[in-house]
Length: 78
Figure 1: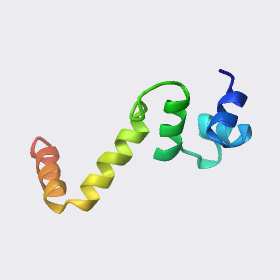
Figure 2: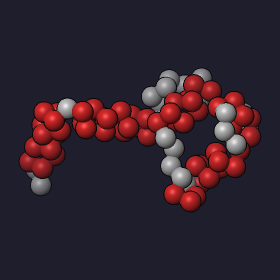
Figure 3: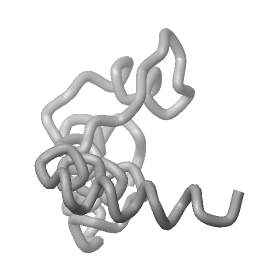
Figure 4: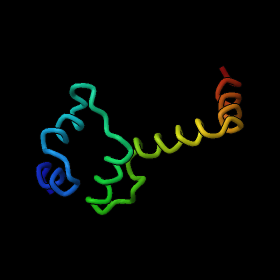
């Protein structure tokens, strides 16, 4: 699938998709965009790391206990 066809399939302009792919103008893929790209390519919605990262961040922000546990684990071996 071409970049232009992918952009049309997921409902964005090909220029926007190009900027995201090149990370130009500080464009980074949103979790929703990565999910739509994955599905358009026949991949699982959580295929791209940006989607998984956003999910983890959302969970950490919404659960203080999880946040503290992760922080303790990550700083333990510094």
